[in-house]
Length: 536
Image (cartoon, rainbow, N blue to C red; front, top):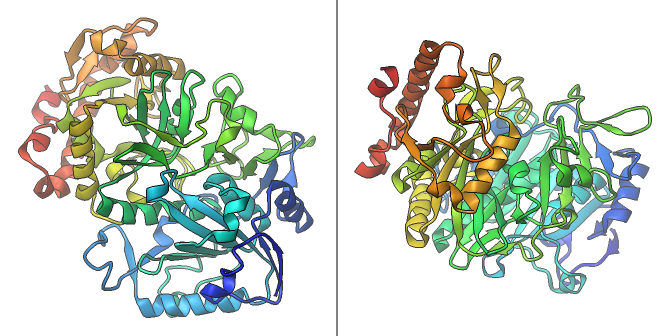
């Protein structure tokens, strides 16, 4: 086994049983990885120097192919209603087969960190068979200083072999694709998919499992900080604007996907961003667009024209086109990945029904209700098989990455909000003037104006009305925002049709929340919408 690169001399890949007749390349930088990816035919350069790769049949996550080892340690801690189990024996067989599959391959190793708070971080080794996957994960996680590599000791290892095909009978898999997590030994095995996002999501799952026992809230959110040190966090699933809205040139970006909220404040899990690029424009999202024009960024499933210029309007491969770049590619990104306790909490929803107002202020009880509900729309391409938006409830705005029961996360959030006095807002980036297919997407300029007012505190001084359907407070008028858009009912051509749609959505909320009723107190139950009010 020949080796290239820097590592801890006492900790090679053989410590986990990996051996290969090929070459193992440790901790290569972007230039070397790009060269290798191109030489191997894995990727191409764009006209501007970014690396672009295609992921084949898997253009999004494969949540149905994700499994967690069910053993004595995880039995009572993991939410098995949301996590598919495999046995320790099945995982052991899978691991042995992974090691055998890798035995003649060139491998790329990155020693990285999940979590910017050093006291709470998860040093992670990622072993990949693709050079571009190594470049991707190097962009997305936190990169130790070169001097730290000689003493690096991983607490988790990810082995990512896209060419490995799982055997459902032998491994307990559903298909040839498998993402298997042993949370006791902190080993992750990813096979049968070239979609690079599976690697980073595995780190999130591990941190979401480990941190609550330390009183730390793991959150599927972006975060930024204003000039006065006023931090804000943005909950939201893919396609709701989480990345776009947190990349605000007037505020410092902490991160765009997963954070922890602990005793020292908010901290990023990552060292990079993974932004959607479908219909990306320099006008609407200049900071993100600029990252696609430079070397070091990895583009995923982006179509190039004859001159190798990215066509961000072309969704022929998938609507889930992406760019992965280090956080410092955003000019106003935080150097530390850390901020104080949040002053504002934003819950983003892409309401496909066209019922929700563009912004609403929530009481703490309403905040927990909507956090546990996690209402949004799945946007085309984020998951395999989803071709158009559809209404969904994703608990805590991140159920796919939550190994524990939602009530654990909900109670942690409620306690932290109470302790630090954060103001909570629900922001709809979905549809207005009608449901999806009839109405139009909420104008991003209006959303940004409302957010700015919420974050600088001026929105708190506005006149508010109580929403007849959900009981939360909605501003009546906001400077620079068309007043009509603040009242979604008035944007519909048929007010009676709006009322019927609102009643339908309220019923969906109530039906969905039934599974939490035994886990919350009376105040949270009282924050539920009312069918009778909505139907009147």
